[in-house]
Image 1 (tube, rainbow, N blue to C red):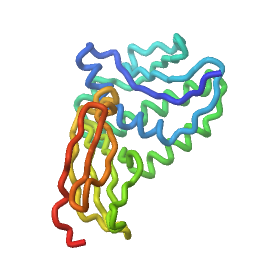
Image 2 (image 1 turned 90 degrees about the vertical axis):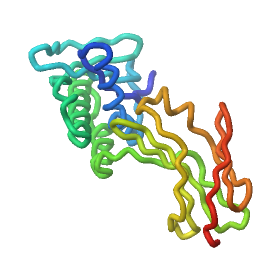
Image 3 (image 1 turned 30 degrees about the vertical axis):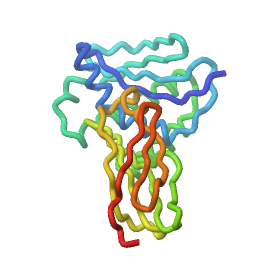
Image 4 (image 1 turned 120 degrees about the vertical axis):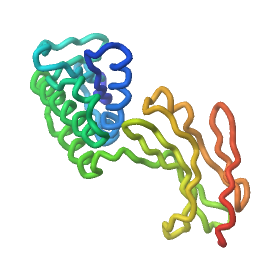
Amino acid sequence: MPLLREFFLCSNLPKEEDIQFRRSTRNVAALLERNFKPFKTSDVWKLLIKCVSPAALNESFILIGGVLTIEVPHDPALFLKLNENEKKEFAINALIDGFERASKDRNWSFAPFQESINRARESRLNNEWWFGKPKINRARQLVARIRCKHGVERFVAEIVVSDRTGNVLSILPLFEEIPSDFSFVPRLGRIDWRNESEILYKTSRDETNLSIGNLNK
């Protein structure tokens, strides 16, 4: 039995605009995924929630290869005119409508969805997280971690260096990418201390030395 664990938004916009729509809504969908407790279903592992104008709504469900496609009456043409915060609200409301329709149709409990929604709301729909394990330097005075910020228009990765009490001492930019998992996930790597003032960032493609400068530690 498959585990339901993935959510995506799409639209009935022309191809290029739909690509932008998918990228710009992915941050909220990914935030809900990370706060979601997957559960077993008889035949669904992914929900594809398609936003259409109310006049174009088709209330039927399509299940292909474990992907359940559901249409919801949220006009994607309006989405393109919204500011960043409004786009986040549009995305979560469309996802909630899709969850409600899917739960009712498949006779699923809505509780796991509601818990994920609540946690996303608690974070004010800001999709930020720590990637990988924190690394402590040899002197055991500094901690380096990779912070990821998945926004509407871009994905940002950076190294945050702090002392052992959590005071941030330095932030080192790593990279910026379009907000698509296919683009930024391959660029995520691991960190290690080369010495007391340099951090090695290594991915499957390459490695980079970053200097944290003199932190007077």
